[in-house]
Length: 303
Image 1 (cartoon, rainbow, N blue to C red):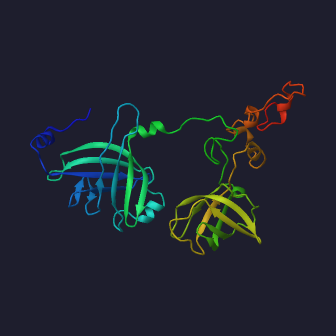
Image 2: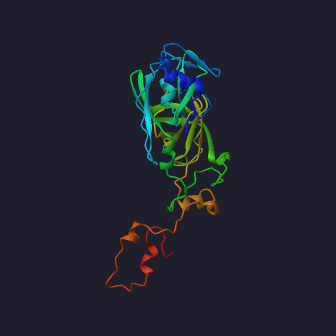
Image 3: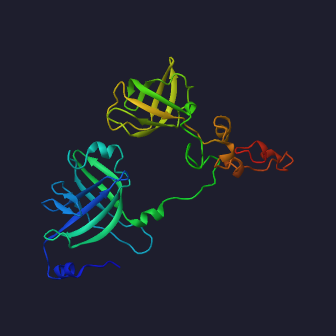
């Protein structure tokens, strides 16, 4: 049950009009920002809640049970508050948001009305709107292991244990030319076979995108030079000479885990699980129907 300070409750009871909404955003990298719909900046616990950003909020919905509640905030992008490039780079993805009702004449009188995470963000020109997802949203997220033929771990994580700092699995390159908005020709990767970095990760180490990472869609070798296609365009333009670090990719197949990484003991999938052809298979009237025909089916059932 929400506890309201008695002094604040007294002001609410008398119809006080000195109320404002404040939003505290905490990004996953730890950076914090404050915003308010008041006409002047407010300082609360050392954090400045900026006015003049156009922040407004929609009506919040709340439901009994485990249904997801939520609301929406809207505002304007500016050089001193929210940067369009930061939104495009994903720096605000899943940021935590605290919504406060504050008496701007005495900011010590305030109440936390909601905790949420930042969901889908829509941009139109210099304006944006962002979905606020309530705490119940985490209960709708898929978690736990799935029974699939492919590995459920990510290459290099604690369950996989492959060391991606090994020189054979890691490359340092630079942009030699820009082939498209999400494709580049790289220098420094000529020693790696085609496809080695497909499904891997590229992390920029210089340039306007420094520190950002993106998954590699395809790695080809054309005329002796590596061409990398990225799953999405970077928020800032690529420039010849921008440097990056790439790590090997994995298609999560058992054969790849065994043959490429010698890591079959840590494979986190179920390669013998029956495939769709097993589920729709029908008896062969001319066969023995002893189950041996399934030995060559997808997934290795019966092998």
